[in-house]
Length: 327
Image (spheres, rainbow, N blue to C red):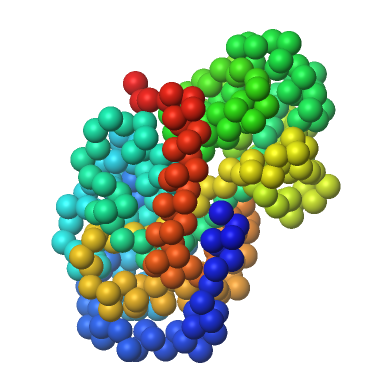
């Protein structure tokens, strides 16, 4: 994923190119824009979308209204956008679970994400971190692997549903280490965190911002960062890939703006330029950092689509190997 994220055209990098705002469809937007988040309010993607939406409203002089439409692993809200008019006034902001993972775990879907939606650009990226309950007698990832091999099928890890990034992190870990863990699904990130804090489960791969206060308080023990780069908050903590000598171990949540297929290209270009502009603002980058999210490189719509396709193929291999299907 890092190779694709590093692809940025010179025209985008040169912020002087942002006057393309004036060269796009000048009438857009002339009324409020709805940003559909197909998950409940309060999660990472919801908060990040609200931050970006406020800035886009200031930029364009029109409201960008966040509409939470959760349910069915993100499919209810996403389908609503797929069926909406392709005019740029109804967008979806979502991540890998809906766009790259659901097609492999659901035998029937009401739409084809990569056909029925056109990416605009990324919203943000969130690092995940492997944490364990303090009662688990391990200090390193190698300790965990050794213990898990002596207790196959006994050590449980928390997820917030089939295909969620913590679920995928655990599946990838098992496939790369030859261990057998037990995935325990909860109804959301907060209940999953409570599960590991209570000792009901022993492992969890939360977003790093959520985990840091608990790590500092000694309530959870950090074993490794799940992305390819170390975390600024814990510079001495190696990545899981480093510890496992598995450079392909990478779990990073990425979120993207998408519009219904058929949305006019001038509208897509105008949205792209505006999103890139607001995400580059220092106060937005600071706010994102406090939420454990990195402001993304400003990928073009084409590079965003290539990234989603690559991630879909990568996680598809993991899901097929584990024979994971939604209940």
